Length: 122
Image (cartoon, rainbow, N blue to C red; front, side, top):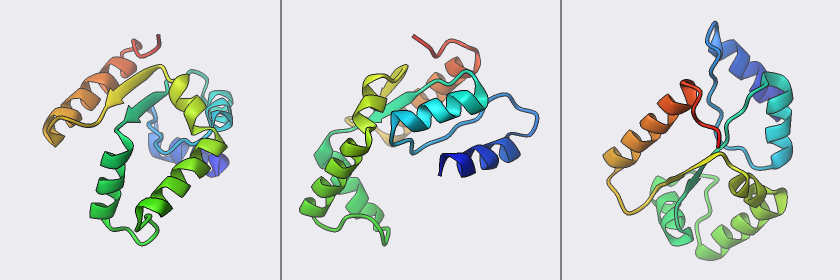
């Protein structure tokens, strides 16, 4: 999966030296992207479990968990893949709850602008 993501990212980036990839689930994927692209900045996006569940239910995708039990099972499976390590070792974290969608998007844009300027690590 990471190899396909790299090919798509390279094609989409064109002459840009910045690529945004979402949905990383394991530290091995991060390491793969570091080998492919060099400098990688990992940004974790956090919201409480109950908030994430409510958002998934509202989103209504076919493959989304429909019950709390299915959601918890998916969370546990992703933790087993190593998503907890990705979050723990991230370079920055966005908190995606307790604020308006507009405020969350503004904060995300500000952080991404900082990363593009080279200030996202640390």
